[in-house]
Image (tube, rainbow, N blue to C red; front, side, top):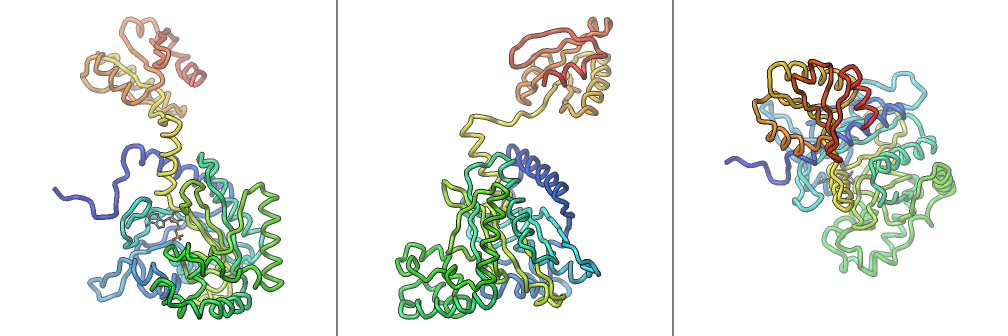
Length: 418
Ligand code: AMP
């Protein structure tokens, strides 16, 4: 038997239902918040990720799926969503002469050669947004609250938005100097990755998972105390706006995010029980220019759908709730009953009632079993005698009560009782 590659999974059963639910919810929100859907290729030139995600990040040094294609091009499967969208904005000059914000969203699979474990896959799916051409702190508040509101609406309550400011270039340089000064005498006591980070990107030492309980890291100088006036003002304004929008947040001064391109505001949506990041994002005001585009501020986040699915499953299991499958199951034995059923099914489906119909030669007993398996709320048990009188036999599958309903009123009856 050929099995699936390590670190992947098939989207089936409850996972698949929850994916559809998340997908539909995300699309609704993006329409209301006026974000345009964008799709970029699953593979891009390898160089794009070295220049965006960063040569020193774990993702690029250890985790990308790289290959040389038949035309001898260096290709990488995208490990995250921002790089491709930025490339597309520049290549297609999507900014044109516009002076308003350009707002995009995506729902895509990503590929990271990670060590598979709970919540970590090699093929993962993210939805995310990228907003270009606005440095307004209102946009930061909008984007952070958009991710927050989607998670809440999906039914995830046990998470917190953690925010931080990395400050602008000047603030970051000042801080990096102070951090290096502080860490210098302790380098030998840090993990080997952090020793490397010390040389290339010392900020990333702050969110090291290996050294997180190390007392040296617990006492590092605080990033916030090195923000210059402008960066501090922005950060304070953001906090006021989040409160204004009823978004619960927490400040986390060691949050720096794993990628190289962030500056200023960064944030993560973190579960309260097991401290797992469901998603995160930040400002990247210099990336468009660095990739050959115009000077253009930008901001975005990515949310891990696989992890959101797992959270929703835990919540549903805790409540003993399984989302129901269908509203109505239509049963019949004879040809005439099935033909009548086909039309009733169409009428219900056109009125947004989730309907399935038996087209097999199963006995009624077996059809009842199928209806139970599909968790149908109502059964329409068609029989020729009733149909001749224009009546339909309706059984409420929870109470087991049966009544006869006029065939012209069946759609209204079902909708009224769902
Ligand atoms: P990142 O941009 O790396 O912070 O990723 C954003 C979100 O994607 C994370 O918060 C996770 O929810 C999700 N994610 C990242 N890597 C993986 C992975 N290997 N497997 C599943 N989800 C992931």
